[in-house]
Image (cartoon, rainbow, N blue to C red):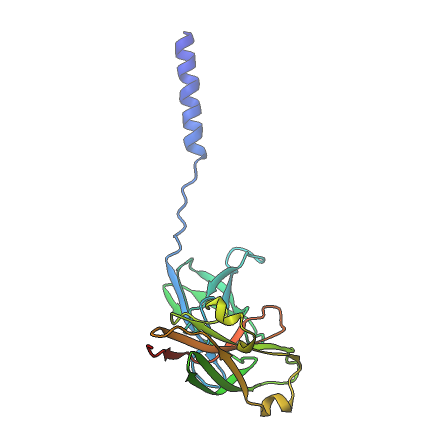
Length: 239
């Protein structure tokens, strides 16, 4: 009799366990959200770098105060995430070298594309580069698409790397550490800055090497990301 009672109890517990199990029928994250971050001045994709900005998503379908999901930018000003849940989202590009923008509401399902246009803090124009013996000399000017309330300009730096991934997050440190590679401002925008042609120099480039270089300039906002120039390729002559 004791064995029979124990068997009934065990069976009851097993049944209770099954009855309490819920089947998750919610579809997995199989949608894609992608797009371009467009420079309002040039009409082209924003010159940036890997993770130079983030696209922030908040799913409003299930919560009024959801945790954000961030999609980092690619160096070409694109963004893409192929593992997004279907739903209704608040979306905003943020943490980049541009003026804050308003968020938008977007329904994401399947392959969803959304472009954003942003106003960069600064534009690097009239860029030149010249190889001088073992040095790379770059000159440039700055333009400010919007000046009212522009944060102070911190500095402009010549970044050099041996791959096309070059910028504030990818550079050869021995070149950036040279005093001649950076122009320090720590000042507000002015007509004098707009009228000046700036010059940076990086020394001790190795003969026979191929380098990639660009100028980055940053302002004193919350993120201190760089507005970046086009990338130039420099092939050093062999001795």
